[in-house]
Image (cartoon, rainbow, N blue to C red; front, top):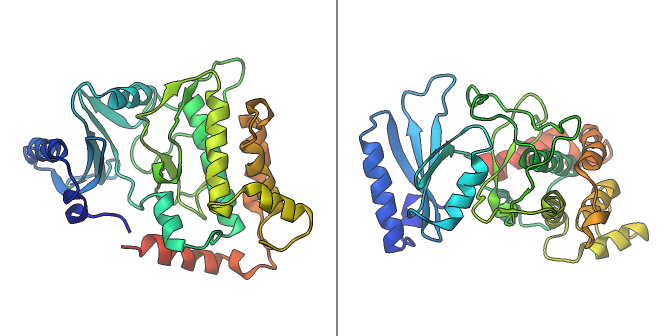
Length: 308
């Protein structure tokens, strides 16, 4: 369950409480914004959620304001990366972005409980979104002059033609708790909402950034399929025709396992991953009741949208 304001406020350090008060005071002078809750706190950083009372069709209805003491190295690293992206506002010790309402992938996983409660179709959709996120980290869409026109517009993550060099930024803290769940759209997120990577405070320049980000999303996928256990056990079982998880798509398992190979050179490239994952979001699995639209809709309604 996501923490509300009363839950978080009990755990704030004095410096964090001071930051909360400072941000709330600043926004109290902006009549269009209404404080809703402290959405997160830790490492002397706080994230507050405000609603925009006068939001138009091209405005974000809610914003997230992340603040840390001036000179905090983690925030500076995060701002350095976010300057290359679209849809954010940076000021001194503050980052303002859209507020993503449906919690984290970790929240959803904890609510589901079962090691593999997500159907194959949802796992493929999640996988593709994470691959696109890796593309976006390597080749950020948008810039200071090309921003999304509102919450309904998603800038596409595209592998550029030619020899454009990647950004080479490794997230370095990419796990289910730093993956937010957004809303549906009409393109690639009709079955499962868009995912958004957050918290670039540990991001570092790295020659192996793409490979390490791929390893991280591969580990996320393995955790969604086989949490807390050695994924090679499940791979070996599948190859031997076993029944540890008889309805799990072996192609899905195989691609995820390739992403976490110890040797970075043996992991798939971004292009190879897109080719391996994108076609599979069209799979339907007609013989598995848990893969139907009705089952998936009920699952998400109960454990995501109706979760308190």
